[in-house]
Amino acid sequence: MKEREKDAELNAKYQIYSNLVKAGLYTTESEGKLKYEMESNKVNFSYVAGLYSTVKDSDVKISDEEIVTFMKKNEKKYKAEETREVEYVLIEDKASPQDEAEVKSKINAVLSGSIVYNQATAKNDTLPGFKNATNTIEFVNSNSDIPYDSTYVAKKDLPAIDADKLYNLAPGEIYGPYKFGNYYCVSKSLGKKLGVNAKASHILISYEGAQVPNQKEKRTKEQAKAKAEAILAQVIANPDSFLMQAFTSSDDSSAQQGGDLGYFGPNQMVKPFNDFVFNNPIGKVGLVETPFGFHIIKITDKQDGIRLATIAQKVEASEATSDKIFTQATKFEMDATAKDFNQTAKEMKLTIAPAVTVKIMDEPFGALGNQRNIVRWAFEDGTDVGTIKRFEVANLGHVIARLKKVNKAGLMAVDLVRSYVEPILKNKKKAELIKMKMTGTSLEAIAKNTGSTIQQATDVTMQNPVLTGGVGQEPKVVGNAFALEAGKISAPIEGNTGVYVVKNINTTKAAVLKNHATYVAQLKAQSAGDVNRVIPALKANAEIKDNRSQFNY
Image 1 (cartoon, rainbow, N blue to C red):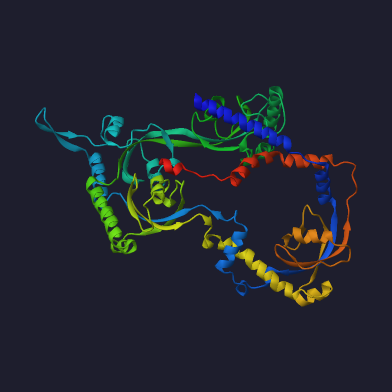
Image 2: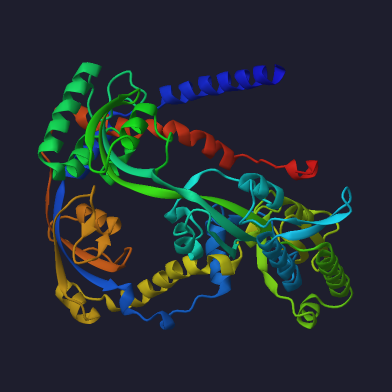
């Protein structure tokens, strides 16, 4: 109760704070005017471009020191938590070929029957096999690791490799042994059933008060029924119109798939919907009411199914095999600790997995999934680089881990950011080389010196500062063009795709408006979610130390 009170108090404080922030967020007339002008002011200009792509990457080299210097100037962006790199060997606790053969032998024995000694009669009794068992269900439950399942299964849901043979079994006929996952199986057919799965499409017309409120237009229940009846009439008259009607009219998320719901089994849908689909033939179209609204339903397919009685016995490591694996894992741990991890793995013909990089509060551990205990160990006091430890992982085996590297908190490792930072720094160096060629007092001279041509940009706005011809967004270039007087030439501008020199042809100012309420409203709508950015910003700016790892998390 006290915890709930604390939560309620904290939530109330947050709501008060959030409301205060919302009250402080407003959009001025000046901001609306700026938006209007950015959308409406237009500039025409000529330009010469020296694209970065014209300079070979091999002509500009970037050192590790330059990358570090760049990261220091942008420290927040490239700040890294402390991480540990852990390499490991996995020795799986899995069945040996002998274990597998034994399970297969047991399955075969179930098929053929067996002879057992009866102490009461002092005679041998012959027990019937699977085919002649008098009570199939009881026989399955007595001999299978997976209980009997009475479900009728469509062919598409049977084990892929054996689906054809299983589905085509005659009643009472047996198939197997066959392997499915970690099991050896034998299956007996108990007969087929028509229409166990169905496929349908629908158009949902909902209304105010339905479980799925209508999304495209407000309507009452009566209006929804009238609209559904009208659509039904159209679909019956023109069956090909169903797809488009679903796209344009349905209030269900399936509208994007033309109303297609895929395959489903009995009772997966609400009762009136279920009854219509499973009590009518393929191709039937009709109208059904449910708590979600009115459905125009088209039954598009049905699947028959087969009921199988399957005896499945799991293939798993025997006790003797698990003991051998444990001995092997323990030997590797001891030898790797005493000698060398890599050499020991080589000698024992084991594979070292690529090192996994983890942070102190991580749970996922590479391909092994969540392994919090390994991550916790990697950060414990006393776990130094080179430390080795064996972990028993349920349903997997033995993981022998070695702490390979410690990356202290600070800037990110150069090799992690090079692919992102290097192009930025290369473009800066390329810009200097291009600028050296951009000499001359006219665009014609600059174009000649750079081996470029003069390009034209027409009616460009600040709101959409795009240069045509595949260049893309160049806001700095367009901004400089707006700043120039007509006929004036700019200095070289470092843009996103190259270095540009621009000449303003003319600038057209937008007509003066008395007020900019429309644009103010647009900006308000765009900034409605800004309040949600406050908490992440406060968190990023705060000095927070996470001590959960000290509590054995």
